[in-house]
Length: 426
Image (cartoon, rainbow, N blue to C red; front, side, top):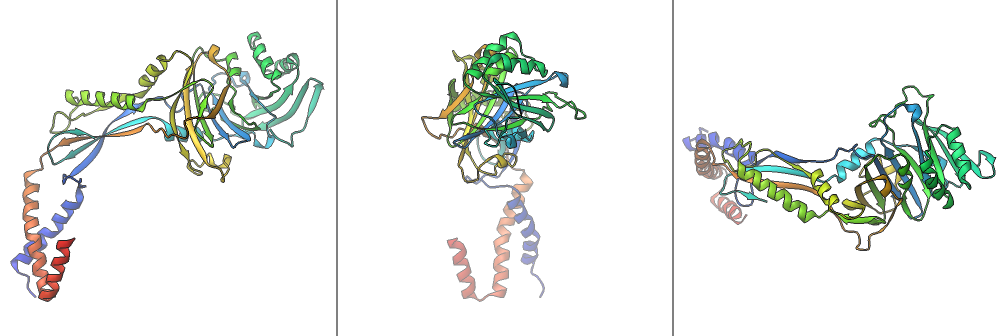
């Protein structure tokens, strides 16, 4: 059957109209919108902290995954980690570097500014039981295990007298200044054990550069959630960035002064800067000179201002939320599948004099979430192109005519009426 002129015109416009309608997303206000990223925040890199650790506590045991920065000759590297009980030797192992990269991506405060260009009016913002004593050179010193683990030689030992432990460390190439003896003695008096770590020089290409130092995982029994920081006084830089992730049954706070990043203050500061940038018309690439163009927010500067405003050493909580088993594949082997976990991220800068062991307890205010990942949507107005508007109007007029013409050929009048009534109801 030959097509009528209306059917031919309908066929011509039907496909382009449908494509144009679906090519741009529709807002509830009827505007057609497309988006592009025009700005984001700058912050500390994942590997910037001098010390970073993941602490996983299941109620009776702790897995400590710790990484520190060190640059120098591998033979000079030594690392002593005090722990409350003898670690399980089967649970001392190198950990994946990606753990901290993935944690950083999950929890790092960030700002993403997205520009929306639409048809409309105005701009708007919208300790192990199987451990055995391998050597007992004196009644006051016990060497529990000596293991070659990845790039490290790891020795677990305990002592009842300061001199015996220090003599062992010196004899085995560990550097301990005179000023650190009192710190070691304080751990001995608490009956803590020590995990002594050196680079395995028998391995080829032994490397302890700041970016390749392999994290070490240690598991030990403890009722408290603890991070042994005081030992770092011995060799810490004048100021050290400390980044700690705590995975436990609840959101936690530390024995240091603990503050949560003020989300409202941060949001207001970003909003103010974004509006100032928009009003300046900087780097504008669209038709409306009030679009924000290029935007960058320095979150690290905000963090430093908040830290400088405190009057005592303070850990800031930058992220807190429930953590689901399997969220990060590299962490899953350390978790008990039957346990519920909450993750809290702590960060600060400390001088050596300010370093004490960090003890975490459940937050008395409960498991409150804090997520500082923000997306700002900035809307600008662009008038639609005249050709597009004219084409759309003609198509929308001819489309129902074409459809009715086709339906009349194939359906009875009653069926056509029923279809039209259903369409109107929809």
